[in-house]
Every structure is written in C-alpha cells, then in structure tokens.
Image: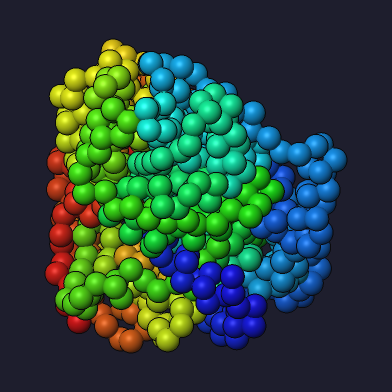
Length: 345
Length: 287
C-alpha cells in the first residue's frame, strides 16, 4: 500500500476506528518494534515465530443445540498471542448442508474453521452469514466460497469502506497470524429471511453496535445469534456505537423468543444474561460519562473512573471503558457544554 | 512525509524563540554550562528537542515527577489524543511548553498561566507512536520536564479534518461552547472551552494550514488568567480545561483569540458563584 492509499485508508477510519478492539498492553514487543525504529524487527519476529512452530488457533466446537456448534473465543484484546481469536463463530448442520455464522479474524482462522466444520459435519457449506463489518467477524471470508457469503447491504458497504484499513491495523496488532489475509466482500445482499435445509433463518436487520448489525434466529432450534449487539462477561466495544439505537436493538432481541443466545463475545447461554448485562453496562457508561462531563471532568479524569463491583465478571475493564471514553466523549461534550458565542466566518 | 517537518519546525521554533525570549533575560554567563540529562523515554530525538525547546544548555533541565502528563498510553483515536498536564506540584511556573518528538510538527502548545494554576487539558493529533512531553519553566530559570511514550497507529496529522466533509462548515467556524465550575469554598475553578475550528495542519494534500494560534483568558476587569499559543497538532474543534484563580467578585470570564487567517473571536463565559458546582472528584482528579 503506497502512502496515498495509506492516508486515504486512515482518513476513512474517521479516527476512532483505529482499533476496534484496541491494542491492549498485551499488544507486545512486536507491535512496538514494527511501529518504532528497528528495521530488523519484522524479520526477527518472523524467525522467532517460525522457531516456535506454525501458528495455530486450535479451534474447538461446542454443541449447544441440535446440530448447532459454537466456536468460543477468549474474551481478550487482539494480540500477537491470540492472533485475533477473541470472537465467537458458529455453524449449523442442516439437511442441505452447513450454515456458518461469521468467519473470524484472519485467513488462517477461516481455514481452520473450515477444517473444523468438515471434521465435525461432513457436508458442504451452503451459506455463510456475516453479522457486521468488524474485522474479527469477517476476515476469514477468504477461506469460503464468496458466492455463499451473505449479509445486509449496509454491512457489505461498511466492509467496502473500512475493510482495508482494518486489515492494516490487524497486521499491526497481530503480526504473522494475519499473513495472506485480504478483504473478501459478501456476494449476497440479504433482503429477507431464508429457509435452508429445513431451518428458517430469520434475518434481523438491527444496529447500534455499528451502523448495521445483523442478528439471526434459527427458528427451528431456538438459537439466537446476536452478533456484537450482545456481549457476555466481555466489555462491549463502542468505536462505531450509537447507544440509543443499540438499546432499541437490545429491546428488539429481548422480545424474540429464543432458548439460547450466542453473543459476539463471551459464553453462549439461555436466560437473558447477555442482553441484560450489555444493557446495564452501556447505561452505566453513558450515565457516568454524562454526569462526569457535567461536573467539569475531562477525558483523562473520566478514564480513571472506578468500575462498579457488579461488573467484576466482565473482562478487559477498565481498558475497554477508557476506549469508550475516547469514542463517545466529544459528542457528549458538544451536547452538554452551553453555547456562549455563535460562530460564522 | 519526513521532508516536510523540517521546514515547519524551523518556522515554529523561531516563533517559539520569540516567545521564550520575552520571559526574561537569560544569564548567558552560565550559557552552555548545563549538561543535557539522559532521557528517561529514550527518544532518538531527545538531543534535538533539548536544543529546540529547552535552550540547549543555556538553562538547567531536570526531569521532574511533579510535571504530570496524564494520557491514555495506547492511542485509540490518533486524531484526538487526550492529554492533561498538571504541574500544580511546582511553584512559580512561568510557562508550559508541550511538544511531541516524533510528530511532523513538534510543538503542540505554549501556555503561560498568570492568575491560573499550572494545569491544562487538551486533545492533539499524533502521526505515529511518539513521546509527548511537557516542559515547565520556573522563575529560577529551570526547565522541569515530564512526559510519556504514546503507542499509536498512523495518520493523525496528514488526514483532512472532518469539517471538510461537511457542507457549510464555515457557518459554525469559531463557535464557542464553554462552562465554568467553582468549588463551594471558591478556592478552585475549572474553565472548559471548546471552539469549532478545523485546525488544518497543512500536511493533508491540497489543504493549506489553517488553525487557531492564540487564546487569551481574561477577567471582565482586564486581569489576565493566562495566554495560550496553539499549534497545528491541536485537534480539530480544540477543547481546553484551564484552572483560573477566580475572585469571588468575578462573575464572568472572557475568552478571545484568533486564527492564522485573522479571524477573531470573543466569548463571555458566565461564572455564577453558586451554580455549576465543581464535582468533588474533579478536585482530586487527574493527579
């Protein structure tokens, strides 16, 4: 990528999208060297990883409903250690073949997921759903037949607009795990629900975590794939969030009868805990930030706010809260600071 | 990208030198008698920063933990990196100079607190991972330096401002939003001020530099709380928190300033004695 494209890509990021899941302190030596001044760093890193053997995610499928498997990722940040595997993907065995939900953070993950599916269910893959345009959910697309990959039109245009910049940043955060990974757009723009091999997959066009989030209900099994509209025991991320719309979507998900909910991050379970916790955390975050701004606190003050005890089961706090302050503060400040002098050139 | 900075920095360093020379006569008998201390941040640019901003040996330089530079070390948004410089642990502060070694334009701002605490909060743009430093000059001619290394993705300085993607952005140019909070005992106050402005660095293709260069904070009866010289790296729609020492009779604060194209702006910020009470955590916060 030449400089012009790089700058264009970065501008498209709009600033806040630099890292969807941030670069936690675990981003590691590699990132620091690559970003810094040691030209030999990339090479050294490659050598050390080769010496440690090939990189593998060691994905594991858990059966959560008849014919329905989830691949649960650790609830961490992107890092050189986890290679971006911080996400949940899933697949469903139907009479006509396998339906996949999300493809993971890299080509390497996509290939491993495809092999896991073949080992678990020896059938062809007939449909791949992408819930939204964040990199950990679609960068495994390369491993699948593009004709099968489907999402909402707005998700597809979001990938088109921001995918390349995400790839750049994922290379920075994860290094060699990303080797060969490129953006592959979903080819099928979904307009309605689909029946595949006796399963009715209800497509729910929602939003709020990003400008387009697709949840999917498998009406046959009662499994609701919520994408990143719901998190469980992992702090929700907000680089593209519209909090009011996110709450509306949580309300909509709650009304849909389901037996098991698969969040984008964290364990799958019934009982509504993911929706309730996501709502509770986002409400706390917004209320805490607005009242802090109202009391004269600036961004670095708010980033030091203690996390309430009831969120102690949620991982990557306070780091993720601090990122949210970076994402949300400016709009709230503009809203809360009184106008004292009108502009105009 | 590596060529441009030199022209810029030479230009702004000369601006800075004018600024610095107004503070007081240096004792040139002592010139160059001070040794350059080793940089705790281990920046390759330290020697140059020392010559550029810290008088290259003509004044004593010490690294001082009482110059607190508070920020989020992992940069989430390279267009808006929040920084608070808190030098309230140091007495007799004449000016605070903020600079970042590896940005294409090093100088971020110079703040001269007068009737104000040596405290400033702002947002700035970063082009890559870089140190961010604050140097505090005290009345005894010593530079007290604090800072941290920032970890960042690229691009904050060379991308166009968001304003240029919006229609009619000039209609709100230099709009001022502001608020003052006072503690009950009237011993501490905060002013938060936000000005609508693209703050173009001149490094984005086809967009010339266009930024606010001066901001003065005064009382209604003309006392100066502080003066701020602002440079290109300050983020679009700049926002500052300052701590003016208000008298109980001060019922407002006047903010005025101008950008490099000569657009002047002025705003009167009400400072009612008993409303808008400063939050208790604000009094201890950011330390």
